[in-house]
Length: 95
Image (tube, rainbow, N blue to C red; front, side):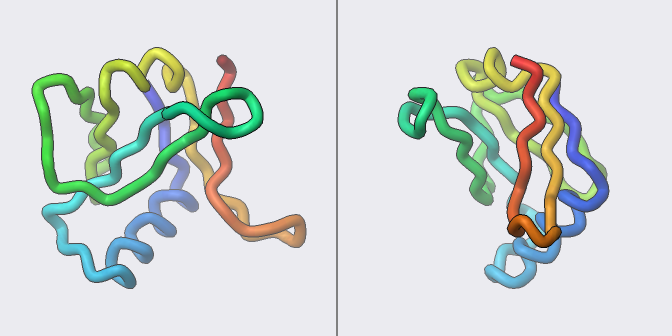
């Protein structure tokens, strides 16, 4: 599975509120073609759930991961950086 740090959770909850999504929307994470390595991470708010999704409960929201992306994300930590080197989500992926 993946883990989400407290800093990332707080940012996700703030973004969900700022963008006008209610509590029915969860965070969908995935991997799709593109980027330097041929793959790129995807984050978006989603209120749909399929039988092919794996769900990680973060109390305030759920993280939805499709089965294909799960293979690339097992053991990954999602963090948020707001340091001098830039702001944004950071994927710490051992794979």
